[in-house]
Image (cartoon, rainbow, N blue to C red; front, side, top):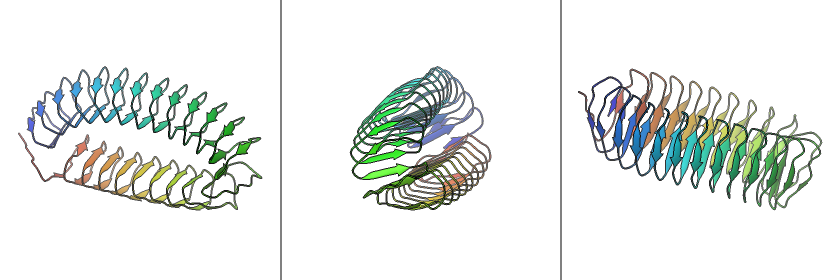
Length: 350
């Protein structure tokens, strides 16, 4: 059920979305509220964008307001201020002064966040500290990263010690790993066994699995696992993961892609995060888009914040724009107007 007005009552088994005020919502799986003074008690997901909401769910909690206490087991997304979230699997935060403790993934765009997780972290702010075991992507300054598998840093004066992958775009980085070393600056010493990525000039990289180039023309990239390109007119063909920040790149992989540029075409199976425009993505599991004119065809989850998106998946969709069409089976989140929603279980209007 999706309601954008006032005085709606929603009682379903799978999903309830309310954007107005004074809604009582009781469901079993998902609940989304964007108004004020809502009480939401479900079993799987709770999304609140207002103030003074109390959310207790078992799997997902998304809050965009202020002063929300969120206690879930799998996912917590907060865009406001002074939210405290404790989950076990995934967290996405865009606000300030948030504290997060989870086990798998965290994406933050704010400042002064302390993070502690085990698998993946993407930070675009400053003064973040992250200690995990698998992956970290940082675009700010003065980050300290200690992981075991992958690390991507775009700032300055970072020290990275991992076992498998490391990507640095700044200067004066020291990288010591066993499998991959990625350097985009100058005067970097790189010692690895499998992968080397260079974004500067006059670097030569010969590895067995992956190559990442961010420099100028005449780069050829052929790897099996990971490729990251930030330059222009690079062609990359890999099997698992690609991260691109440049223009006019074509990517074909199977697992993950993160792009910040324009006019990219993506074909993968699991996850994609795009912040540019005119992207096309066909995958099976998850997509997060913040731009315009995106087409999304997946099977599990999609989050869109722009306009004129068409989304067809089977499980979950979150849209904050207008004129969205969504046909799925379980859950839809819309914050705009004039949305047609067709689900399988129930649809109540009062």
